[in-house]
Image (cartoon, rainbow, N blue to C red):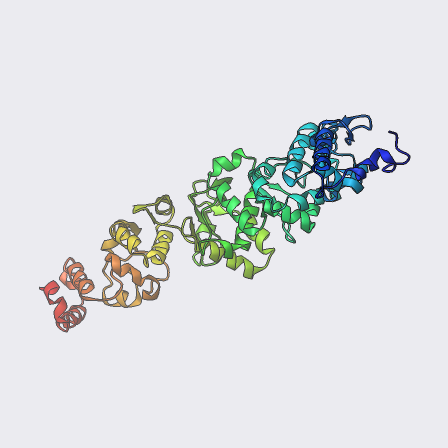
Length: 490
């Protein structure tokens, strides 16, 4: 029964003459209609979309609603799929064809066709489809919760590198709206195509599939996870000094999103002994800021230096020369609870004297004492240093090296009243500069102990070399001593 024109003629209009269900006065006509419908259901009387000569039974065909079509055809164009679809020429008589068994394609049926089509054409077939096709797919399957698990397994997610992956892929994120995406080196992060994410229909579909936006919070979490593996893990993933600095800069920029107030426990670039280190459990020294005694800067280039110094490019990268930002960055590092940052040498760590102590002891005891002065605020340091500091050997005025706990500070007052004590050769010997040494037994003022030691020193001189007035003055001062010192005098 040839057609006159596409979709016209008795070839496609004959279903109009299939009687619709009515109440017949005579049972004969009702039975006749039932038999006609039954016979038509089992006969090959309808064309599929595959070929005009391929006649199929009505019960073997599915009618494709217009919302499931694309540019005059079906969304998934395969011969095997077209063979199960009713030819579109029957659109005007579909109500009649329902009577003899033609069913309408459901979303579940469309999903099954989708899987068959993807299995046949693969990623190249998906990639060849226009944006409108992908938008329609997103619109049809969005919020189909019963199908979401299977949809996540299809490679229908476009990445910015041109590849396609399934939505269940790990570390898969929507492109951010504005900020340039920072991808830490060594993490297999996949970010969706930016143009696809800008299409609201497709974006809603991506979100329905569980893909989250790649924003600062996700980046921070990925950086922390990456650095948790330690320096060897980072180096094994191909990270460079620049990428390590960029990671820290990103965390500093978005520090409000972190759980702690200071810098988290991540790896940092540090320089020591003329080479570069990558430390993740560091004690790293920061130049500038509170380093008023400048000892780290003084010794950082020494071949035996125990001071790993933070790479100066951190501040250049983060602050760009802005001192305010540099100060904020240093303060952020200093507030870290998991990593040890300092601007002055650390003398006690984990209850033990450090390599920094040994280094300064070997090189310059005076420099070591300057650091001790700045460490006295810590009770832990004070307890350890109270034993170690008095045993330090210092050079005295008479060029003899003596135990620090047995000498005096050559202040103006002590030199005048007790000139025969053993005085340490210390720079700027004022109480203002060195008063903390009292805690370690060194004499800084002319007290009872100093005067008794002066008398002891004078007793070793010949009588004719001792000034009586000096001795009388010392005794008068001792006689006026508070009751608390009388036991020492006696």
